[in-house]
Length: 64
Image: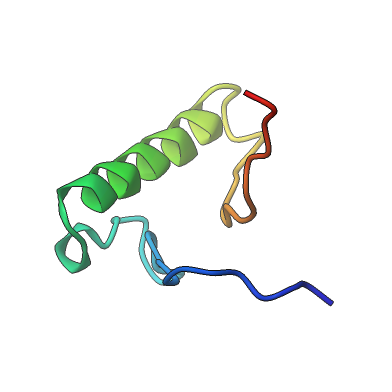
């Protein structure tokens, strides 16, 4: 069971289309959506069709 997270939920890319939902967010979130769409495309193209990340989740933890 995952613990509750603070903050609002953001769905950057819809499961029905590879186009990011940039119209739903402010400029910072729209840029994040575009970046995630780019990395998804890049990971599919290089190596050609062997990898495809379709659902980014989680948090990055750092001691910095």
